[in-house]
Length: 200
Ligand SMILES: COc1nc(N)nc2c1ncn2[C@H]1C[C@H](O)[C@@H](COP(=O)(O)OP(=O)(O)OP(=O)(O)O)O1
Image (cartoon, rainbow, N blue to C red; front, side, top):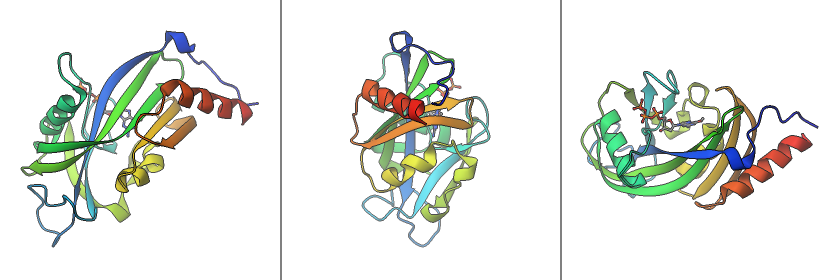
């Protein structure tokens, strides 16, 4: 039986809402991307940002952050995309939800994953992120959070998903569960994941 380590009892956990937004391009002629050219086309390229500071720094990720008091999750997603990439989202589609728990911490990050399906502007570097387009065949998973390679295929296919990941530190995933469907219960996912961990 694997050691469960320093886990917080379920009734002491608390959730923090965050957003994570991805922008895709249909590719076109490979030139500059803008004005939602990818909408309705096969996803050829994805815009990622190299996080320059704070939590997750030195990794590529989508654009996002904490939902602020008084705003909806979708409003937070639009605001963070603008702040971090200078793109203006005209339409956002929810694609999935991911719960991240870190061993020894009672805080669970509840990350709402969106695709900006229409946008205007050109991506530019901000204080927090340096944007870069990648072919979807060459996503730099070795320079991203370890969880991304699990759920990215569902994001690319626009298949709704819900996931739970338990991390030890910022590199090691102790256990995870990923299911189809955009709104699977956190309690059920966590229970399943911890059972898996016990059985390892
Ligand atoms: C733990 O695994 C994670 N994987 C992935 N792919 N993304 C994650 C993970 N944990 C958090 N994230 C995302 C969620 C957010 O988009 C950012 C973190 O946002 P941040 O802490 O930078 O929030 P801000 O509001 O921008 O922070 P400031 O207060 O510094 O502006 O990472």
